[in-house]
Every structure is written in C-alpha cells, then in structure tokens.
Image (tube, rainbow, N blue to C red; front, side, top):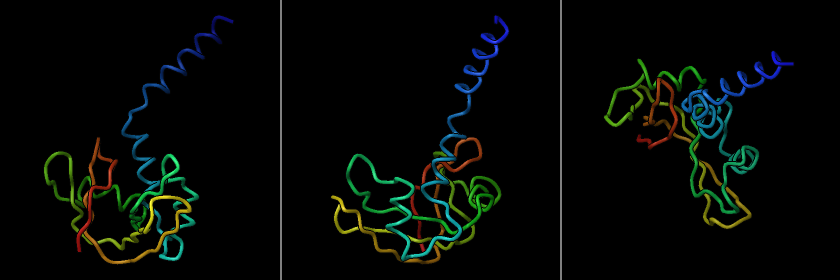
Length: 135
C-alpha cells in the first residue's frame, strides 16, 4: 500500500512539473497550426477547437498551413530573432486568416489565404504565441 501511495504522489509531482512551455506549444498548435486548413473551414475549425472564449467570438485567428516541425523551426534555424523571445520566419508560410464581423454569437467567420512571414513568441525552442504576420 505504501508503494502505491508513493507512486501516486510521484506521478502527481512529475505531471505538475511538466514545463509550461510544452503545454503552451500544444495550445499553440491547436489554435494556429493546421496543414489542411482552407478558407471555407474557418467557422467549423474555430468552433471545433473551441478557440472562442467566454461566449464571445474571437475577432481574428490565423492558421499556419504547415507541419508541426516546420512551425517549430521558426524558433530555431527557420527564424530570425527580433528580441523579447520573438522570432520571424525566414520563409513565408501559407496562412489562412479567419475574421468575423461581429464578436457576439453566432460566430460566423470568413477566411482569406496568403503567403506571409510569421512572427511568434518562443519559449524553450517552441512557439507559444502568434504575434503577427506580414506579406
């Protein structure tokens, strides 16, 4: 019995000690990385991923059409440092930008697609915040 209690406590301590960056990378991927994203899917994807908060519609959300590895590389060899843990991609990505006219439900989005340089905030080599993009 003592061994089981010890193992349970150890498991809880180790799971609580997971780096916040790893958890933030997972959230970043869910909100901003989708290889198969297309402009007609904005409303469906934002609803499915529950990207809107507290009963309001997020005005704008951008999806990078790339693999996890390609996006993570922005924080390493695929990006240039801008300061303050911000990195801009050295290559352009196809980005689908979803916008809504009204921030009250129902949340209906329209999308546009273009090639953009993407700026992200990085922590321990992982993107954790989509800062901006430019053509």
